[in-house]
Structure formats: C-alpha cells, structure tokens
Image (cartoon, rainbow, N blue to C red; front, side, top):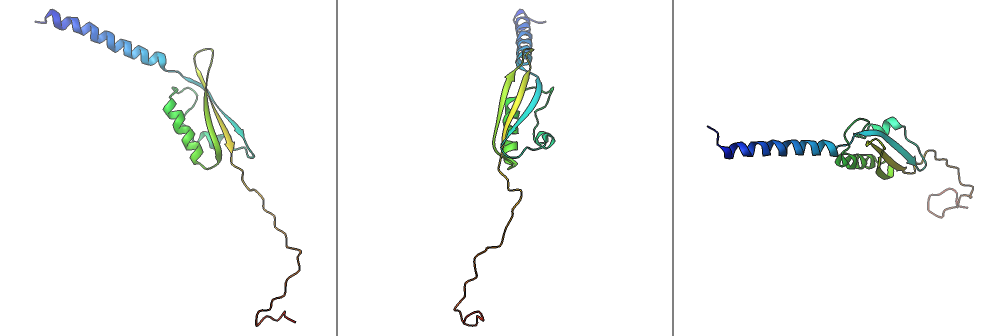
Length: 130
C-alpha cells in the first residue's frame, strides 16, 4: 500500500519534468532565414556556400551549430574572414547572417618577354663570347 510520503514526491517529479520540458521549448527558436553577405573580390555561388552550412530555414537555432558552420566555412580556404550574426524577428524567430570576406584569388596571369638585351657570358664553351 502506497504511503503518503511516496505519493507526495510523485506530483513534484511531474511538475519538475513538465517545467523543464516547457522551459526547453520556450528557449528554442526557429530559424526564419539564413543569409550570406559576401565581400572581397570574388562572389561565390550561394549553393556552394550553403553546402558547407548545417543551419537552414525551419531548424532550431543552436549556437554550437552556428559556430561549427563558421569553422567549416573558414576551413574551405575560400574566405579570409567569416562572421555569423543572430538577428531577432518580431515574431520570435531568428535570422542568421553569415558575413564572408573572400580571399583574393589570382584569376589571370599574363607574362611578357623581357625587353632587356641578353648579356654576354665569359664562361668557357659559350659561343656568344667575342
């Protein structure tokens, strides 16, 4: 037969469980949109950037995932600087903005022949020596 002491603890345990569950969901925010603002010399296609990012519209906002996204984008070697910003919306959702500065890349290299005259060498076996 249950005692009064055991029954009294059960409602308290249920209360704590419901409180923790509610507090967890109240703190959770959905991502409304993910933006990529690029600076620097070259603009990368948004598809290639979003391929390296786990954060997306409709997912729960998680700062750890955002930090991993920043590290992942930086480790591609395409960017000199990567920063993520969180922006609250009026309906309680979050916009995530990645600010990316691309590294300068050499696209075309043109070489031209030197217009300087060739110097004569005094080394043995050189036929240009006069």
